[in-house]
Image (tube, rainbow, N blue to C red):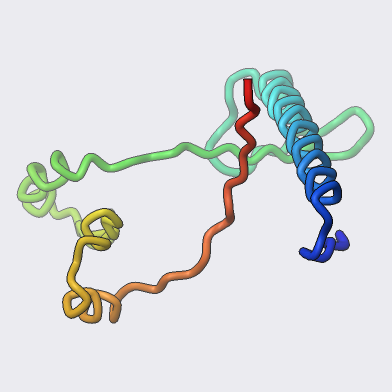
Length: 140
């Protein structure tokens, strides 16, 4: 486990903390980029045809097995879905089984609600803290 420093630091210690964080962030970005490139090369090398969606198992000369899990991202065009809904129902497609209606909060509109309106909406909304984004703008 990483030992987090106390928040009661001198100005020099605060600057040192920022430098350490920034250096770690840069190292992480490089390592992530290298891993991503190597992973893509491994997949192209061992599954030149792209494999099938799901788990692909490749026997290695060592007797070991390489498992590559491939997936596809699919996004539904809500406007098109609404337009073809009658056709899907007519074709006997259980639309509730194939897709789901997903309600997403529009934060901008949510923030504009009155306090009275927000109390009502908050019955359906769970708010938890997100991960803070940190950046440094270097003076020129």
